[in-house]
Image (cartoon, rainbow, N blue to C red; front, side, top):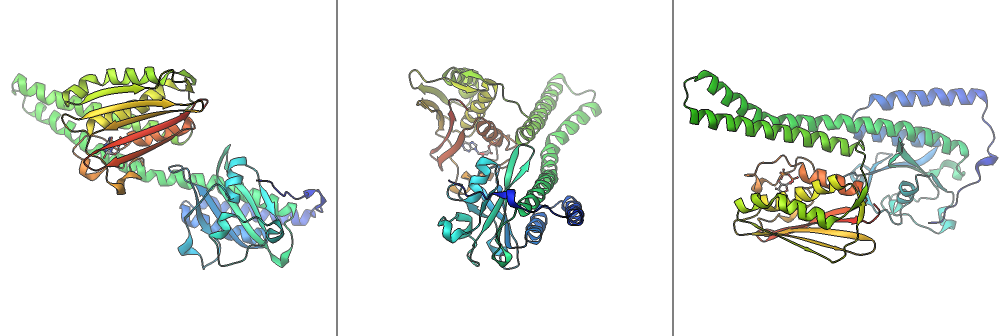
Length: 407
Ligand code: ADP
């Protein structure tokens, strides 16, 4: 998308008094931003401050959704617009998409002359957009979204000063958004605590029973100890998964990239799960395109993804069913599909199963915390890939991930 960036060198320097007043104002804004820990009110505050600071008609915040990778219109200034908030904005054809991709700001002073239209403006139909200034919301090196202001009052053009102010506001807002998200995550910790409650209670009950009945026979001792052991292993597994996911989500995992042969990885995973499949009377098979290209990736992490998908395909299968792993690829990507003949997933659940802690109620007899697919998605996306699912209830599911050769 070609840009019309203004020549900002002709702006007059501001007097010292104005600069101090601005600084004081920004400090006040910053104080308020950091005092707001809930995302929705925080974003409203950001858009209201943005119109104030830049003397514009409307402001909007668009945020990238980590789960879906899509851009959402999250907040718009003014009273009229609340019911219209949180809409998806396509990357292609939106100013915000361009800003997120490049990490740069963008100014268009006269939209009508410019002739381009941007898809976020189509979502704000109650005013006529004449000019736009958009800046990225960056936290460290990561672009979280975009802050946009529309229509400088008195039909004036945007100045270098507007851009600097909006940049400063966006910088502060991004830190506050990240904080608010962390705060919201404490809800997830509550969910984890809930999940941990059941195995911990079992461990306590069994161990208390055994301590209180010192004369129980050896067989009962063994059964009791096995249960304690099983629950404790499950506990550690769940806590580790939770920690792993939060590290992946916050970008604290460094991928150890090397040339990876996915065909070999798939063979290892299937060998490893052979006895588990036998126990459930499920057959495993593997089909791979010849001379599948190697990819640049983290072998251990990709092994973890395949293991998760194969584990689920066995776990949610039926006796006598099968799991087929297929690898295909071209000069750009390699694709891995894990198909099963199991219980399937209802259409309404398909979008949700990649979310953490989400478990399909009807499949609930199986042990699990609902973290495996969320972790798999994070790993695949950290490689620049995609993961998706197709499924039919009662027929089976096919989970596919696709990775670029040089992700
Ligand atoms: P877990 O299996 O630990 O609950 P996952 O994140 O791996 O967590 O999966 C989330 C949910 O998606 C599962 O609880 C299950 O209901 C559903 N699911 C995953 N894989 C399959 C599959 N192959 N067939 C049917 N349902 C599945």
